[in-house]
Length: 525
Image (cartoon, rainbow, N blue to C red):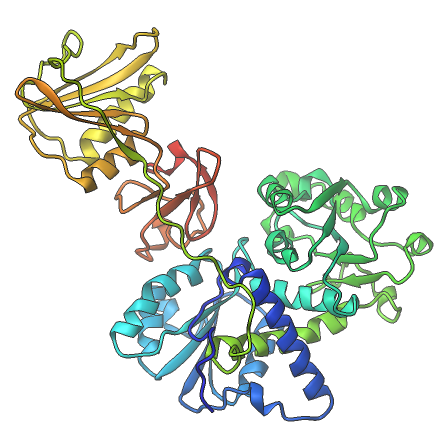
């Protein structure tokens, strides 16, 4: 069978790595696959069926359902399947993830890696770095599938959840109203819904959790930006009293292992707020179904065992759907299916917006740049450094400019009043006669808002105003503050830190783990 479908070699590190139409296509193929297998067919048109294709299941955190559904999906596809875990692999010998995966790519003409790890953003990094490396080395671009990375995302769980919701709604994607209940702060499965629920054209989400377990603000904001109606309740009792309960409930367990001591002391009260009771049954809307990513805490489940044999139980079928959706996803990424896709894919990467703007140079003689700043006959003057900031911050920015640009030259610098009475920094460097595009971008990243004056023969020959850059990367002294990010120096994975400015704000998002940072936070741990 020829495998040249349009998704071949793609990776899924986050839900957004598939466009909305591509997600709907996945659900359609998973539906077809499930129907054929349930009817006793062999579903050969969905199989990879290639003994030279390797599926590596790299599970560096414990898992049962995700691992076993992927293992069985690999068996369905009749490919080489290899299992790795933290205890029995070279990862226990301090080998980097990058080196280990690079070695495995060399063992097969084509490969797919399903990775579960505490390192957030690891699949995005491996795809960006090892995808081009594989092609340069004569291998097909491997696919990387995130099977759960720390508290970040679990996209294939989200896909099987959306598939299960669609199945419940008889494949009507026009609207969904659901409740998310339990530990919304630490649950990556509910975090993924901020993007995953876009598969529905209209979305109402009810967040049911006490404040200590509430959905992080960043995900609530993302839901609202995506057009979702979001309502918040502190307990199931409060939710049912509203009289507006959804017919689809999605429970999560309390992840006590991720909570601090102060929250742990409140565990009984928190658990009570999000645990279903028998006396609540009569208050549910007709046709209500309960879902759960599993496992349930057998000692204190939020969905108690008395519900197992009732019509509310949709979590067992939901769990089984993991096999079909993951098998369909592997078929897409291997190129088995995809030729009949006719929707919109991911948008092309946007070009970086201009943040270095050349301003008209003055025809007048250069200004005198403050007492104490050596006049420059030929060279450069960096002005308006951190204008309006506290003096200490301005001095720190001056020091950073000198270090990042390597200005170990005859020069002068200082902090002075602006015309409005605020403070600003100035660096004056005589004799430096050239300043390239790369240096301009580095200066803009270190000191957005500054002005660069290039002076020749006593006059300002060129002048640049530098705004806040859209991306900051390729600096030795930037780092993500998230301890679990794959790029964090403590992991020694040698992943370059990289940040993208969030649209409409002054914050920057880590390219790998998607943690938001204020501009000042990304510089030097």
